[in-house]
Length: 259
Image (tube, rainbow, N blue to C red; front, side):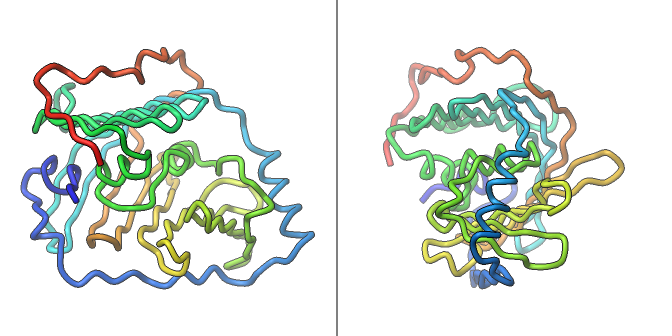
C-alpha cells in the first residue's frame, strides 16, 4: 500500500519511521441511550443542521511521526453538495500542487504530481486512504470536521450513547464512524474512525475552538502511528464553486494505475 501523504509527499518522513508496533485503542462509547429517546436525539440533530451548499477552506497542517520528526504543508479543500470534494496538498510557500484528490459521488481520482502518477477506478474510501495515509476517513467526515456539523444521519442504523454529561455520541458502525457532539449546541466535537469490527479506533479527529480560531487534531493509530494538527487559516461558506473544479483530466505523460 502506498501512503503518498505520509511517505512520498512528506519530505523527511519515510515509511520506515512510521512503522513498528501499532496499537488500536478499544472503542468504548459510554452509556447507551435506548429508543425512543435515541431516535428523537438523532432526528433533532438532523433537523438542526445548517444548509451549506459549498465551502472553501485553507488548512495549515503539521504531521508528526512517532519518532517526533515532523513536516508542515497546507491543504486547500473545496466541497460542494452532491458529494463533490477536492483536496490539494500545497507546500508552506507557493501555490503549486504536490498532490490532489477529487471526489464526485462514487468516483474519485488521485494525482501525485511529484511521481506523475494517477490513481483511478478505485472506491472513494480506497482513494482517500491512499491520499491521507490511514484508513476509514470519508468525504462526509472531512466536511464535518471543516464545518463543525455532523452530516445527515440514517437514524434507524445509529446507536446513541452519552459518554459524559453534555456530550452525545452517534455511532454508525456501517459507516465506521462515531460522531460526538456538544448536546447544547449540536456542534461536532470529535469523530472516532473505527476498524471493520467497530470495536477499535483507527483514528480520532478532534475539533477545537479557541479565541475564534478552529483547529483539527488527528491521532492516527492504524496502519501507522502518527498525529496531525491542522489550523483553519481561511474559510468561506456557500461561495460560488464551478463543477469544473472537480473535473480534472489526467495530464499527458502520467502513469495510470488502478487499485
